[in-house]
Image 1 (tube, rainbow, N blue to C red):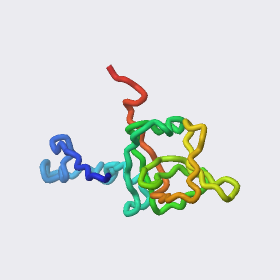
Image 2 (spheres, rainbow, N blue to C red):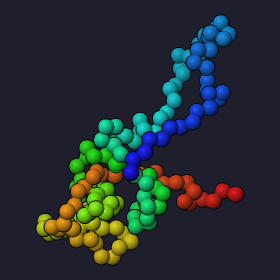
Image 3 (cartoon, rainbow, N blue to C red):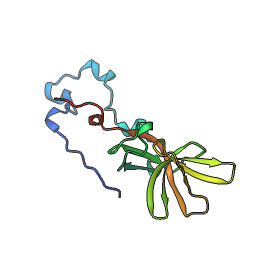
Image 4 (tube, one colour):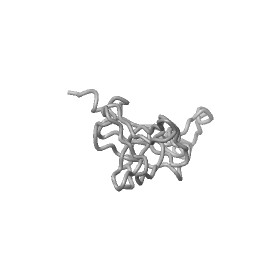
Amino acid sequence: MLREIDFARNTDKEPLANPGAVSGFVSPADDYMERRLHIAQKIVDDPVNTFYFEVQDNEMKAYGILKGTILVVDRSRDYKDGSIIVCNVEGEWLNRCIVHKDNEKLLLTSPNDNRPLNVTGREVVVFGVVSWYCVPYKSYVRLS
């Protein structure tokens, strides 16, 4: 379910760590040099409680969540009515919108489903709340 990803780095294209050691002169622009942007710094609030899932169906297509989309799921967030969540319903992993109806029924809905799944009284484990999702670019545009 979870896998580590190790990115290959091309060290030939990375800037020198200490250009002054090569030329003997430290550039005055070094004072304004910015660090590299890492996407996790922008989309992850709590790294210990953040997990990533890859979507296997198009059930949430109306929300822009397509097959192959990467979900960023934060377990430290509390879900509320209307939250998009990842949950396990009796052994089946689902990505749905959670809705409380009449303060009695617990429903899991998707925009493509005209009949919400009533999970009241069933074994439901809410894994976490979807805080971000990253849609593959190839889903929208074909580059020739």
